Image 1 (cartoon, one colour):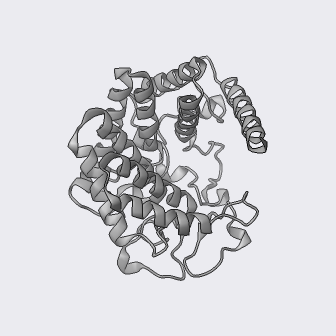
Image 2: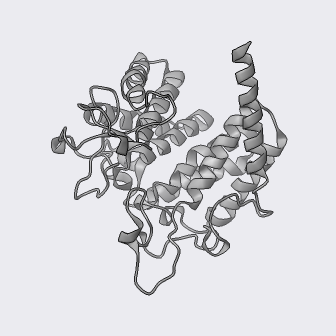
Length: 321
């Protein structure tokens, strides 16, 4: 009975959160946090990738004298997760209001970044790999609605990615290249993109999408996973960010760590591949990461999580995320 009451209370809170989120949507479909002059519609492409604030860089490092230009780069990311969260909720609590709100967001993104429009990879951090995480959410929208325009847009995101030589995730993985290169090897975002490729394969049967994920999995598993099961990252001169994949030869146990976001996405990737192929290796990888890397990142009170975990020592309170 107690568990039932807790569950009911959580459902009420979830519905309240959904209602409040839907109420923030503008008439044009925008559901974000940027002021009108600095949304992705007003600034669809960054003038310079160096002008934006990266996810782990302090603001002061990016401040430019004599300019009031807002730091952009995470607006499409917000819509990516609005779509993801709302569609996941709607899967268990059918609500056409949610689907319509997601259609509006999808249509707005197509209006700005559809074929013949702006280049999505020129918006966001790490050669656009943060922005192209939209791929999974757009595929979720396609699978929910069955509307061809969303599948077309998802495949156009792949085209934009492949046309950017510093991103080019699918091409690099089909050539069995290193995950260190695409989008600077940003681990969490790279694997989030791969989740989109899994859904593309499910919906189209195009073997290139599946092979992209399989080859990426092989290289991550062989060269970028701790004994604990979490995918490690490390700041180097060639990636400039502590959340990026680094070469196996550069591994240093004192500085390499696992970002909890990367652990979670790695588990998701493995579970999707298990469902798709039935291969036990994906179950084994997901289980090892869950029982070691993921649980190790949770604080004893069960609420807070560590941003990063080192393999050989307990996380510091400074690492709370």
